[in-house]
View 1: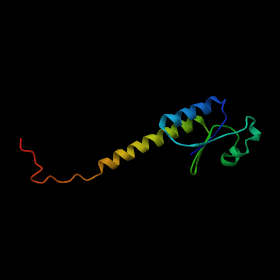
View 2 (view 1 turned 90 degrees about the horizontal axis):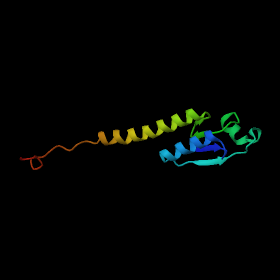
View 3 (view 1 turned 180 degrees about the horizontal axis):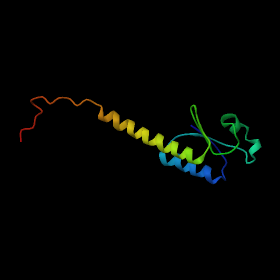
View 4 (view 1 turned 60 degrees about the horizontal axis):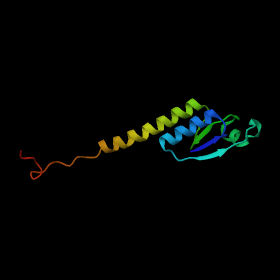
Length: 101
């Protein structure tokens, strides 16, 4: 994941806090304050506003979408590990394993 942002932006801070809350590792690039100078932002998102989060082929440009995406990504990661644990086969009890209370 890569976050394009400016340091003074409140919406960018919201996204950085959400990334930290979920413990995601990410690259970040501080971009120029003047929108027309944000060529790297435009190259990945087609616009000049920040924050912009790029995760593989996914490009998000709205703060609420980024926050929802990070929440979903975190929850899906937890569900996957829970599902994996539930699908592990339970070995059958042998006669020596049976309780005799």
